Each structure stands twice: as C-alpha cells, then as structure tokens.
Image (cartoon, rainbow, N blue to C red; front, side, top):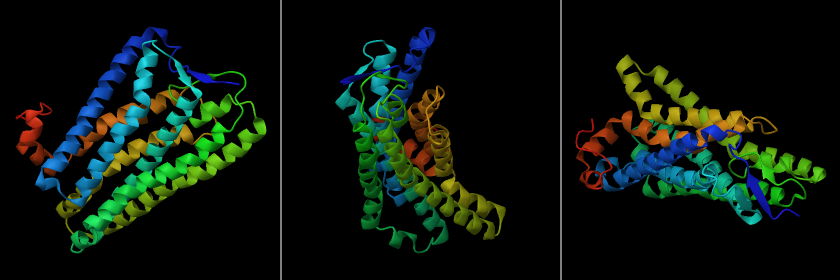
Length: 310
C-alpha cells in the first residue's frame, strides 16, 4: 500500500526550475503583502467600513490562506528539497485546497449579490446589509466549503493506492490522484460523486453570479445618461474582472473529466497569478481605496505603501 506520494510538479522542465522558483516566490510574497495591505486598510480606515469592502477584506484573507495551501510545497519542490508528501498530508492538502476553493466560489457569489442589491435598491441598501447579515454572508462560504470538500476528499481517500505513487501535479488534486488509483469500480463511483459535488461547489455559485450580473446589466441599461451608467457599472467592474479570471482558469482545468499536462500551468494561474493580481485590481480601479491608501498612516509606517501613491 502507498504510504506517501511524489509530486512531479514541473520536474520535466529542468532548465527552468530556478526561474520558475523565483517567479513563484516573488508572486507569493507580493500576494501576501498585497492582500495583507487590503486587510489592514479596510480594518483601519473608516472610509472603507462598508459591506462591499468588508467582503473584499474577507476575500483577501481567503486568498492568503488559499495560496499558503499549495505554494510553499511548490517552492520546496522547485528547489529539489523534497518532492515527497505523506498520504495523510496529501489528503489534508486536498481537503484544504477544495475547501478554500469552494469558499471562494461562494464568496464571489455573495459579492455579486451585494453589488446587485446596491444597484437595485440603493435607498434601502444600508438597512438591508446590516452587520448581522454581512457576518452571515461572509461566514457562510467558509462553512459551505468545509462541508462540501469533505465529500470528494473522503471518497478519494477510500480508493486503493497500490502501485504508482507519482502525482502528475504540484499539489494533491482530485484528478491526478484518481488517475493513479488501482480500484476502478470505486474510481467510477468517486468520479460520479465528484461531478455532483462540482455542480454544487462551482457551477451553482457561477449560475448565481451570472443571474445577478444579468439583472445588473438590465438595471444599468434602464439608467438614463452615459455618465450615470458608467458610475453604476464601475461599482462592480473590479468584482466582474476577478470573477472572470478565477472561473475562466477553473473551467479550463476542471471542465475536462481527466487531467492533462496543461492543467498544471492553468493551475498556476488560479493558485499563484490571480491571488497576486486581485489586490491591484481592487485598488487601481477603485477611487475609495486609492483615497484611503493616500491617507493611511498605518500602511506607510509598515512600509507597505509610500506617500506618493496616486
């Protein structure tokens, strides 16, 4: 019986290991710093004490944890320090990765609901989105993620792993693990369960987001004046960009029943690149965040920004 796995990662790119290590390390540091800056900024600046920024800070925290699940092991792998991961460690990583990934999907749906409510019911928005409702909406994606992720993780862990233990990925994911399992009947059952869970984990929140944005577009089209339309759309443009980036890469990877060589590179997008660019999308396209950054003495004292930000 297999007691440990070997993560092949990008071992076939021997000449690019160091270059890839430097890229991933810099991206991880930037991701941690950028999302931490958003967390500190939203907590410290009264200008950003609104439901929208509360959800953005929740998303920033989720991005930090999500990146920490896979990137440290990838960095060790690229240095050749250790490509092994224990059986328990592998499935712990699988569960954590799926939990936080599902939580991101539902949190994006919550943020879409928030933007839809702000545009559709602007006069009642502050009364509806009170502290209690915001807390429930922020915590619910985490709970859903922890619950749903337990199902495919449990089914996959019950598969029989008796032969090859080389996982063709840089972290323990469902398809690469199923590809090396020895128990075919259970693999089929597990695959069916995973398809059902995937519908609730990613497709359901995606359809919710799509529905909200169709409603938002319908409302914006009824607004008279181009400037007013632009102002209304600008309140949700950052969230729309982040959603498209995240779901675009996820659909490419998980839209196929079996993994492929290209999956590892697409996985780098939503595990490394997207958590890196999200803070910039939310700051560079948002006047309130820019204003808060300019006046933030706390972040300047920590060296996270300089006084010339504009």
